[in-house]
Image (cartoon, rainbow, N blue to C red; front, top):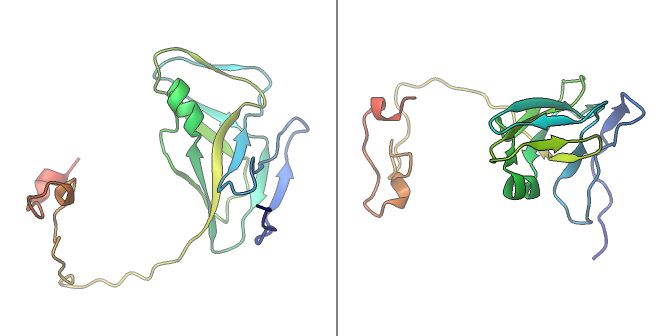
Length: 165
């Protein structure tokens, strides 16, 4: 298969010469890999969270967001994820892209300069116009949630207090 030409132009600014700009690793990859831009390695102890800079800023067009997601290889091999996955970068943000990483594994993990730490998917977003109503339209599911559709017993009818937290 051949790569499809880009269909959306995104302005990107390298903030430091050492920054590795986002890149698709294969022709059909959905996400651009994001790499750490560090002066020194960062060790993530089990349970620790660190905000890792990527060394670039960007300008997304109106109507788009960048969804930042964990890399599956880091998650399955080392337990490295993101505490806010997926994170959202809004179209009006112009600061440095940084990725919060969390070590859910059992061993320390070292993030070095150039380590691919996350992936970024560019997605179209719609702006919603909220309309307050007295009653919502009804569905067979109703208020059932938190696994109610997978029980085989029909929608779970729980009180509001059962879903708080």
